[in-house]
Length: 489
Image: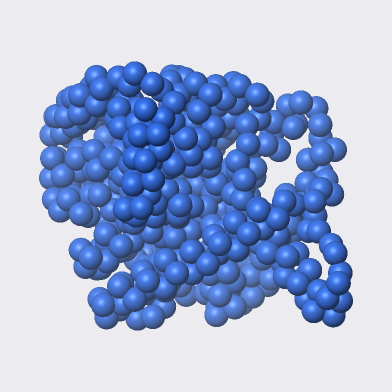
């Protein structure tokens, strides 16, 4: 096994995290939060020292394969969260390390689940870091690293595949670093536009940054316990809702627009399904909510915001949908499973997977009537490789097995089925709020240490689409890597 290469890449990641922590430390200095500032200063020192130690193990050979890519990505995300939790613990804001780890994992994986019953007491620096982790994790930590430090050469695609979301990963252009630059360029551009619109709507720069971080990363952490409802502004609701939808779109679509290939965007099947599902959900939930609000416009406003928040797995809230009619609540749970588009910052199963599952099922039904029928599944007018369809079926099976196992373990806490089920679903799909105790006005703080560890694993596994997180716990995985490098050696 090329252990030195794995250590080298992870070392770079930790040094990068230490550098990024300078931003919330600066915020703490601005607001004169000395305890928080010192907590960040200590954490930066610890994280940078650990990163430098690993970085010094420079590999003689920088080659690695897909399995090493999985190992690097999984270990990087775990360690990012482990070190990222330290400011909360050192400052005393979240004394229990497991709670702090859960909160940080929720941030980096853009889940937005929280153990905090009220967040304002954390202070400006910690709240900034808590939401900044959304923005960092939204596009992917390894993608950002490849943008500034192309250390892996031709093997960079292995990292992209291990970290990206959706049935398949591909570069936008032949060079990996150029692809990373394009992705982050579009990500930053959308973020800046949203920030300007929020400030223009009367938000302070600090509030607008927090709101933007949570929206761009489709994470949902806010600096107010009431979430977006705190602002009581239709303008803020609409701007945030539109940008949640925008960040839930496959970023390849924005690249096609830049390349002046708008017709290809309009023909994209996943995008049409995405917009169609949102339109159906907004209209039907809005009509279902009509008796609860003063006008159709108001019910549609709350419906639009919450549908946009849930399908993109952002998790912001402007209303307590725990109190909504059963149809609306159940449709929101369905949207938790569906999720956003592949190649976006959103979580969930992804629209493209759902579409391909339906098409594959329809083909199998037709084969029952016509056993000799030879047909292929198509998406966007192109035939889909059978390997991709098998991978989707395997992904769904793994999703169900991990979900069932997690549900059984979490059920040891004796909470209601609705609470346990939606908590697991919300974490696996990186949504954030569920129903009942873990609804938009509730927290995950009442779960036991074991349940918080299980749900932390679910958030990481869901964000990395299972394979990296599951493989690093399989002894055969490491044995195979070891054998490969012995042969190479």
